[in-house]
Structures are given as C-alpha cells and as structure tokens.
Image (tube, rainbow, N blue to C red; front, side):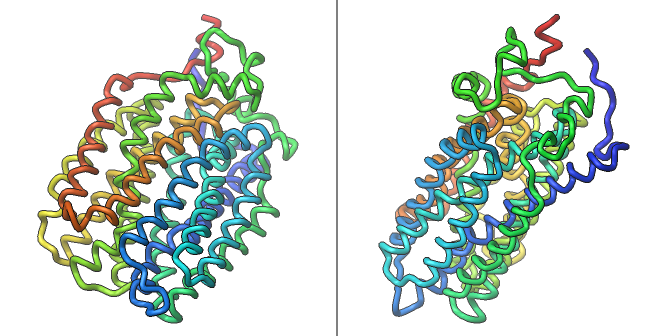
Length: 438
C-alpha cells in the first residue's frame, strides 16, 4: 500500500492548530527541564571555590552519579506510567518535583544533601522525554515523524545551550545559589503553561486520530497481529515492546552513544576551564556551542532520514556515529585555543545529536508504535542513561589518572562500536497493518 502524500501543515486549520500547539508546549516543557538539569554542571565552578562548600572533583562525580542512576532507573518506569496513565499526569508531577529539587540544592551546603537532592532531580527529570515523545507521536504520523521529531528535538539542544549560559550568568552575577533558584522559578512558569495548553491525544480535543487524519496505515509491534490486538498501555503491549529485537539493538546502540553527550554535558565547562583558564560565563558559553550545533544536527538528521532514506532511521545513525568516534580519538591532541575548542564543540554537537535524536525519537515511536511509544522511548532512554552514567562520572573519577585523552579514547571507541552494530539495521522498517494483510 502506498501512503498518500502529506504536508507538514494541512488544510484543516483547527486540527493543525492543535498539532502545532502540542508541538510548541511539549517543546517548551522539555526545554524547561534543562534549566534545572544543567545548573549543577555550571555551578560546579563556583561551588569548588566557595569556602562553605569546597567540593572536590571526586565529590562532584559522586553527585552526578546519583543523578544519573536515578535518571536511568526512572526512565524505565516513567515510560510505562505514561503509556498506562497518559503524558499529562506524569509530566506535571515530574516537572513540579524538579522545581522543588533545584530550589533545595540552591539552599544546601552539605555534600551528602546535595547528592540526595540531585538524585531526586534525576527521578523528576526522567518523567520528561518518554511521555513527551509519546505525546508528539500521537499528533504526528510516521511519514513526517523524522522531520517533526528532528525539529522538536532541538528543545534539548536549545535547552542545554541556553541553560548553560543562563546558569552561568546568574551564577557570576549573584552567586552559584541563585543559578539554582532562578532556574527553578523559570521552570515553574512553564509548568503553569503546560497545565493550560497540553492534551494527550487528538481525541482529547475532539479530533480524529492522526492516522485517520493523514489516511495512514497503523504500525504494529508484531507483524501477524491486528491493531485491535495491541491495546494502548496494556501489559501485553508493554511486554512486546520490551522483547522486540529491533528495539533491543537500538537500546544497545543508544547505551554506547550516550556517554559522549553526557561527558560534554556535565564536564564540558570544566574541561574548557582547565584548558583555557576561563571563568564560569566563558566556559559555559563555549560549552553551549555543543548544543548550538546540536540544533542543526537534530533537524538535519530527521529531514535526511525522511527525505533521503525514506523514513529509514539507521543510515543517519551509522554515518554520524562512525564520524563522531573517529573525531573523539584525536580530540584532546588538538591545540588548546579558544578557536579550536569552539570548533571541536560545534563538530561534536553536530555529530552526537543526530543519532541521539533518531534513536530515541522517531525510531522509538516507529518500532514501539503509538500503543507502546512511551515504554519504547523510556526503555531506550533508560539504556542510554546507563551509558550516560559512564560519560557523566568517568571524567571526575579518572581524568587525573588517564588524562582527558584517555577519556576521549573511551568515548570514541564506544561511538564507533554503536555505529558498527547498527549497520545490519540499515533497511529495517516497522510492520504495518496493510503489510500484515498482504
């Protein structure tokens, strides 16, 4: 069956208004999560110099580790909760918890307490991606999903970029504590907007499903089943998602991809500070180039996967992961100048955000289907978050022993391995109802 052509903006203005309203509020919401996620990575510079705190690099790594473990575990749970209870409930609870945890960190001076609240922050942050990805999948169909999710995924590139500068600015101006306080207050405002403008499905706004609107066949988890056999949020669907072979390969690849992103995300400002002797604002600004390039990488990856590779997701990931791995192997040997450092962060951002976006965005929705999209996204992101623990903590524990060159060799080797294991998936596509009938 050949799907009819479609446009990103169709002729039904009421339906389109809801689609792009959901796009906007979910984009803003995940952007907002980064305000409270990135604060600690920039505040480390001020906290290390604060005589009331004097955090060591190893203690920072333990605090990061507490966040990452909680975030990884929370991903597996939040995806299932969103499939069973809907995006709205899960995100509202998680976002409010994130606000409170960030404010508590700003008021804390004891290392253990900081670790406890950043651990809680990890749990709250885990309620963002999988539920919101399901929300987007409910309003946008498979043929446009790479392009739309690529555009949507700029939320975490823009979020990370602005959050670094935002926290660095307030940290330099008023002290590191206010970096936490002001970030939390801003996210609280976004939480109110989410209450007003978000809905879980087109049906919740009195509209037909996106498949009906676009005349598109329904995707299936199991090829010989009918759509009626796969009830949204059922334990049967969740079990099928967790045992799907393609999704398991995606999980492994994402586990190997994520360390590079989180090493830059958590330690990028600190690495620049050590190389250049720069302060919080400059270190945060140069580090933010990573996310700036990530915006381009996220958009291009989705468009290319839809328009060049016909909604196949693996080719873009294979190409960018192999290039990323090769560059990371030589990263630390480059001259330590502002220009080279800025260029390196731009290139890494371009290459790492492309597979990051595809693997845990359109690929998760395609192969998890609308019925199990949040479970699939949560499972994939959970596996990636386990990998993120490596990227987020290894620099703190081993940079003094291995040197940064050793850290980048580890990250580069993992990226190369991820690219290689995805090569057999080059032409893989999800099953559909029409293919089942054939």
